[in-house]
Image (cartoon, rainbow, N blue to C red; front, top):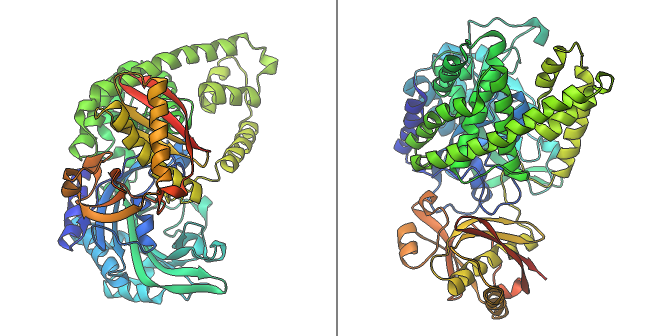
Length: 592
């Protein structure tokens, strides 16, 4: 079964069970400084899982393009993609274990007809806080799952919370047991190096996880866990993996989601997708797919945050293309329309972005071509006695050279690099990066601190003040908030004068001083916009939306959070305003 058919069947199946279709969130979360990318369908729903009513109801479903930076280095292994699509359904205090497990079993076995004898399920084995999940066991058995197809695991495998296992959860954190579904590839033999006995969580490749039902039923308290008043369900299943199971192929890159790209790479390189060529082809297919999607949603390569990730993806792909004897610009240009069309047909992007995507990719590859040449020159002019693992890491860090490429280039000169030394240097660097970015929440809940909440409301005031002073041509093009400042991108064909910037600042501070009330309401999207509410990515909002109104001055579609009255913000000063490119500008402001 094709991936597009599986996506449609999943959404239709849960719609038939009265689930509302939640639009996919942007891959780059707007106005959220706490996470680089949307990494799951659940990310935009965290506030509702904690009790806030969702405007679309208690039963929700969607398909969410997602990206996880942790998997970049792992791509090449057939199980890893850094860009993926997550099918998800949720119950916010409505149904619970029986309905969820019954429905997902029906979807897998009836809708997409996976053989029941190839499906295995896992459950939480219990601990000092929570008993063994016998309820889910009884449900699975009633659905016909054989006893020897049900496995129990500890909290590390079958418990979910943002903090980890129950003992790691802080007071107030929510979580619960999980039940995963695995598909068995019977043509793969167990590799004893992974253990004497094979099981669903074995790393030998025989089993593939295709879905996980999380039952959020508990809150951490001082002396353990207490049941939540409203129990929630969060299901997530990777479309790439489900498609692999449906096509009974353990290689996700051999599914229809990747094969058109792989085929073009094969045709252009004259090499087959096998042996030593599999890994570089997988990297190109995965990284290029992610890069195209990011650019289509407005991102450009840079040396900071999301832009740096995009740059890294394109450069890693370009190095692999050269390894295959390909002209990176040529093959990327050939593959890009296919990727754009795939995502446009799914409704995630607009196909009209194609020319811009090509232009940005070509510009970046022109820059990297020079860097690649520089790297080769660095190798040529460096004394072979000084070339070691640290040299290789410096090339990786500064020019994006993967270790294996540097190793292969140096092997031609009979210079052998120590892989373990490089790994140690890399691990030390990665640990430092992880520590430096520890403030970024990996699950998606935005920073709701007092300071960022003030900046969130101030951003609405800034938006309206820009329109008031510069005119109605001003529209929001992006935003970013930290605990130190706010940044707002906007469209404007001109350059604001210092007088105009001072006027904007004065208006904002006047509205703050007026201590205007900030009112939150739930409204019909079309009616809200007709009434004057402004929207960023308006087409991505559901039919029922959350609206924040600031006195009689500002009204915007927004998920929050905000202060109750503008007086809580404090005085604002505009730091600077700068051009981003044709018709787009960026302004910075700070609470003083």
